[in-house]
Length: 176
Image (tube, rainbow, N blue to C red; front, top):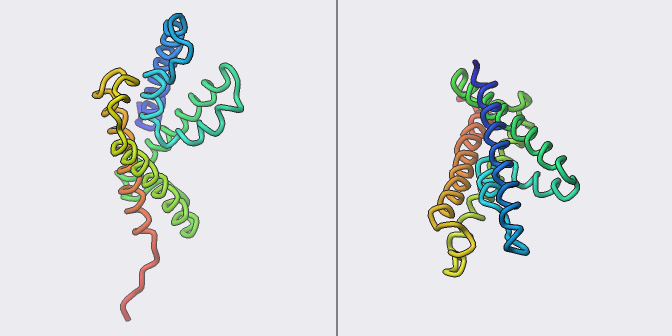
């Protein structure tokens, strides 16, 4: 199968598996804790799909029950389809799969680069303010490093890939 179909389907399967793990985790921790906090599965799901974290945070409070999970799963499929299309576009033409109109393309590149910088700064602040008592709120420090590593990696990919595309999209002066 083609990459643009298999990558979204694989990510949807991963999301469904992590949603199932999240449900089981909530069921088991609800017996012993009042407010257990976010599950490791939901933390991993958001780290894998970090560019969708902010829209998910804004929309999830307005969606109830299964609608939140269904909407997020559909968004994950569409997002990874776009990632696959960017991979294909990069292999073929060395450009991102964005708008063809130059001003809109530059604006989209700048917004995506800004989002990558935002996530890098947030993760850096989290690392620099990591208190010792926080060690007990996550399963292990290795898990914490994995989640932050995925987030920093996403930020670096967004900044480098779309920053390069923005530089390529800028108008060039021709030598007279």
